Length: 581
Image (cartoon, rainbow, N blue to C red):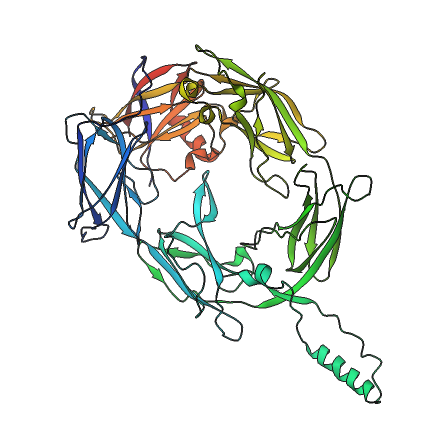
């Protein structure tokens, strides 16, 4: 069981620190060995070991020898993360509780050897099976999509699995697939027929018994025999192949969850493709006045039921009229957009039992505008036109969920983001990335719309209007919180996670600037830079899931035992922390 540890303040003080330049070389030394993770570990030869400085631009890579040994020499002093990787194994980090977790930084001192490091590599798991048709014939070139259950923002979700790039993701001529290099976890598997919607006609006309009876009736009529009056042309719905989840279901919710342990091979995950009735969706795109658009729109059919992996939308050429053939039953959104102007239209649709027609009326794209402000001790950047501003979708933005084009800031510091669709967005700026030299010290301080700071809270852009008068403020006085984590006896406590989060629950969002996680180095030292000024809570934990620190329910559990920390504008605070159970 994960233990949440309460924090006790030992000392708090501020001190000035200079920004360190890029590192070149030093006199530190680090040695270690890479072995397999099992009851009888064996050395792993030719494993790739990587050393990366935690805070600065420095790194190195070596390969283990026949006895699994490695060494890094001439290392500059600092805090480093060490990881190892080899094909067929799962990448591991030194100090991580298990693959995929954050590692423990290692403190390197000039002229002294660092601790001897042992990295344990776990073998990757394997999923393998065969894809056939209903009559048992193998199907080649079927793409296999593997989804893994992970914790994203503290919520259990399905995400794309990470595995070795050499895995056989498409079936071969025997219909066989083999996915290897998977970490331990829970998975689902879906077969996506590439020929169903992309490489061949998406609608197939089946020959049925009704067709045969009708054809015989036509032949009887041609021969002068009497033809039954009921022998009218039969309705012939199209058929097509849709993505199928193991074990042979079209619904993601009905897919079998496959648990895998480290190095396990699960075979026999066979999937049968079946022809299913499909339908036609057509329609027309018009302007608000009812006329044709001035430019040809792009049209999309988006499966919003979440079942059609690998089939997020269909583009059916250009023009004010559109047709989608071979549409499987389900919930959809039909959408149109003019690429140059981002004029848009959407309509919800349920497909099943018959063909459908849709009328889409274009609406104008939305805009967001504002200006930049600089507050600091140095002159503001001379060339503001090299700065880019953008809004990143926060969740789904209607039918499109596309990234709107960035805006170039004008010389006077004003900007206008155009082509936005209704939805929720998070603000992003490229100030540090586009401006070299001293200007890279500027960082985002706030983005105000009236009295609301949207730099950490998504902005809502609604249909029928935009947002103006955003004041985006930058500062060259970033904060820094550092210190030493130690146990009750005063020894360094490196085997912990440190979570720092704002006391304002409105900012408890995915990728919030006001939430940070770090691991102390082997000497217990930790540092967190760039938190916006404000009131924070600090907690130390023995273990934590990836991104769990962005989950509101998880953070609420930490509040009672967390330590309060205040950071002022440009403050550099050293906060030593003791832990007690």
